[in-house]
Amino acid sequence: VDAGGEPRYLVSGFCAGSVELGAQQEGAAGTTYFLACPLQQRHTTLLRLEARAEEVMFVTNVASGLVVTAEAPSFESLQGEGEIKVVIVSTGNVVADFTVGLANCSTELTAAPAVTVSLHPYETSEHKIKLHSQQSSGGHFKCTATLHNAVGALIDTKVVQVNVTDLQITSGSQVEVERAGAIAEGGENADGGSCSTVCPTFFDVGCFIVHSCWEKFARVALAVVILVVLICCCCWAAKNGTLFKCLKCICSSLCSSSSPSSSSGQGTNVHVHIPRPVPAPQSPGAIIGGRYPAAPRGVEPSLGGDFQL
Image (cartoon, helix red, strand yellow):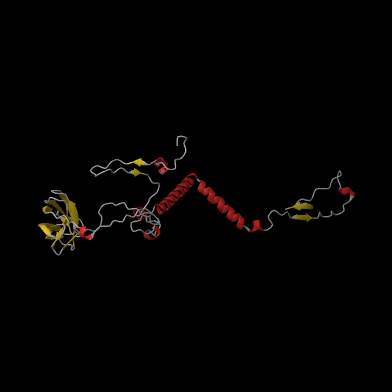
């Protein structure tokens, strides 16, 4: 042990050296020292006790008690908010069990089960017992708060007056309520349908705004903007004469394309050969100064040669 080895027979060699010596128990007769050893896992121990039957006695403590107060606040019918507050006190000298509940209620009322509680001498306890109405109309009803001891004997009672108001019938929630859930196709529509079914027309701008169909609203706005731009461009062209020029060019191109001369033989050169007439033989004396005499008056000279049309 002094050299650091593990002991074989000493108590410190068990439980990884964590064995502790317990203290003397107060009020116990004789020596009650013990050894404590921490465990690394949970262990289950079975302990068998044997005793003589004639020496065993089951004792039930019975004490007296009182119902101090029992009152029922007014509530609305069929709302599940009714309850009766009952305060009891133990007037006995021992710790005992008590059972508090409601009995003999009107036929229009249904009470929750009774409650069992253990009280010390002169200890008080408050309990809330649920109360339900079985009809929509209200009225004045009554129940009896009861207190029983540990053996089931009735030891005290108190009558409770219950005021139930009529059921308030409304047409649903009158304020905006946020609820989690999926958004219907086409936007957050009032009836949960899509925009194609709620607003089928193209120019129903009011329906688009009411049912939050912003995609269809954007399409209509884009169409209106394009139409306004086209009208402005036409007005500007008409004011500056550009529109007239464009129409003139279009008409000219249409007329030129439909002309027969332009469609047949356009751009083709036609050569015409006119033979020169052979002059009649004349005497040498007819040539004056090496030139032919002029044609007689009233007679046009004849031409000859090639011409291009």
